Length: 231
Image (cartoon, rainbow, N blue to C red; front, side, top):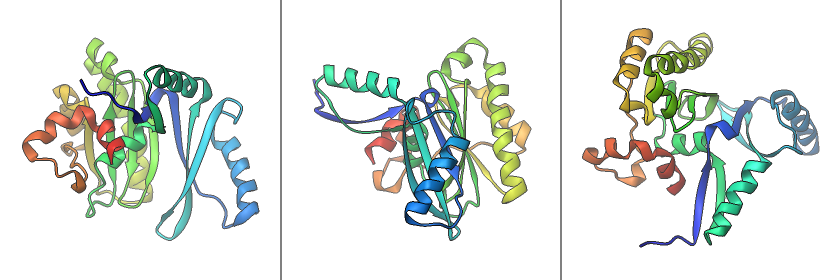
């Protein structure tokens, strides 16, 4: 068989938090001090409880900060498992970032609601061609869909409503809905989404550098996070 010596790993939605923060127009140490305050205000976890990392992004010439956190206990558990298998971890990031990277927002799309259904959780992401501007983590994962698909779909659509309201109030009425991960296993979900939002959900278009043949794209959707880690 094939044995990996190094790996990029994603952290489940239920173990990570993403927030996009708009800080005041400061630089250097002033910005660092303000960000420390903003993190305390927007994040439910402290530096003692979680690993906190951030990067700055520019959205329509406005400086914003994308911050991610993962509980330290979960990081340690993943590193221990990888070490026991003789695998060196090269990067560790929230699953939502990996799935978003795998299938970039269409250049002609003003906004997208990008929905990922994973094993124990779901994430609903608002994004455009420039940035990820919202992230909602829910419990509508595969296990819940297998138990009660209608209830899981309603829960997921409730999270989608939060993102849709932001988009329509702040940005545009023209947005796409893209489903990935295990979402297309459940026809009832896509049907309920189309009725609720009056538009059909679409399948992801993977990053052009991957050159994924059209006939294989649907088979790869459950592995979207792994594809994003490979880019």
